[in-house]
Length: 325
Image (tube, rainbow, N blue to C red; front, side):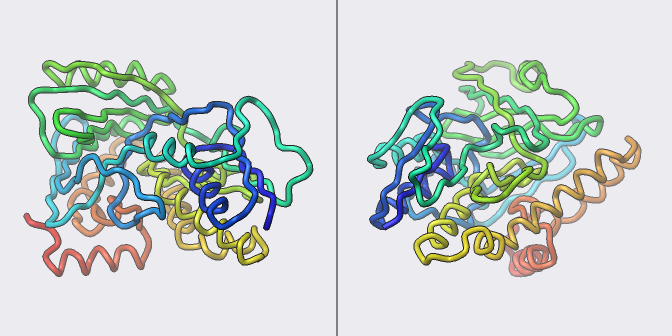
């Protein structure tokens, strides 16, 4: 039995801590708060299920893409492509099961066999984008997920169905840290009437973490920078970390080997993002228009698999009639 400290009770930290506790290890979770909440889009591609199930609030099959205010592409799938989950509820349900917790700005002592860093982007040792998310209630509800790009900026607005008559609407742009002001203006333009239920902001990693040793989840930089999705890679990293310790493997080598595909796909997105940032406006629009004409690239983007294997999977899906239109 190992004595383990986990610093950070978010997606990866809570999942890893509960897995290891259930395997009989002595686990203590450290977090500054006793209740988790970090706002984001709360959607996950429907290709992964965690060992402790999350609550699915909405199943998304229909998507629309906008560029500079114009609808340029839409697609409908035969089966669920994304799911909207109760992320906070899922994490807090796991945290309630973890027996040993230290709440507050407290660091683990030196008496642990392992100290796992799962505290997200908050060391600020990488580039981040500042996002703001609003939960709104509307009467005129649509089951479409919308991603709206502004070619002047790097990032996007989103409108995701969260539950019946409720949208998760957000904004995040690299060039503008005041995402709340951008979001409130976007809401006013996009919706004739709505009830604002909650507004919160948080940084999301888009750059490499300064250090990966003994890190899991977003602390390790496991967020897809083009989509901002980090729930699935963070969860997968927690499962891999649990296997590394339980099987007495060299932790950092085992993590690097088993996260190779995810980290390669993240690095591809970082490269594409860096190219976009340096591109002038007319070429940006041309790149967008090329992207939106390609069903295969869109599908690969929606599941964050913009590499050869991922694109091949998307090609097979489309050939097999996975898209309705």
